[in-house]
Image (tube, rainbow, N blue to C red; front, side, top):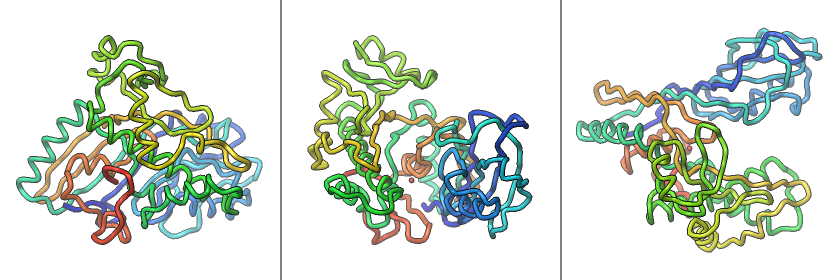
Length: 348
């Protein structure tokens, strides 16, 4: 089984929390791109509009090896009404005005249309069966291999950055490497807990996410709240360590402490330093696959699904297909001979 054999096999449509209202001090532009990362498009917008790159807003970043559509914003004070972006493999779908700049995180979901190729007949039944299970119970919300780099050493570089007295000149790259270290500890926590009690079981002391309200709260009694977890209303969370991260207590803390030991880092390492802010947060251990569909067409499977911000479509595909799945993207971490992700069970 193979996915992302071409860019057109991996399509993403960004869904914001709101629609531009048609008036205001910012232009909004929805752009479809193929084979381009979000930063390249933002840089092109900066050149075309005359705005600085820091004035270009976006809700999140999208894959390069894909066909994606996403929104960008820039100040209307530039006096520039965008008609075309001026780079190959990118086109404008819509333009509008809004009262505020588009900011990171103002993203409701991403709608994916994916193709898995070269399925054997027995594999088709496995994919359909797993889709039914995931629709009922969600799937592991781990970070994918892309988070850790082609050589699989981003987390190690992040550790070296935090241990150093100086930050690299490229602050954006430094933040990404450090986030990879946070992600490695999260993935290890998820793996340990999954092997022990699974990802759907609440325990006393958990910090659980209320999926409907988007709020965190402590679990005083795992047994009392378990029915809500079974209805996919609540999920336990894992750590992205930092200054302001809220911590579980009692039974729920043991997996996180073991993950730190396994990754050979101390929690005190995750502290903000000059030029590098590390607030920390919590991340649900389960992800929900909204409107999941699998349509078989010969040896191909067409998958449609909406995922929340930060969820990896490639991880969902691994959950659907199992270890027989490979990625066709050139230079992908899942290609034969490529390094695996350190300290984790699996691969965005």
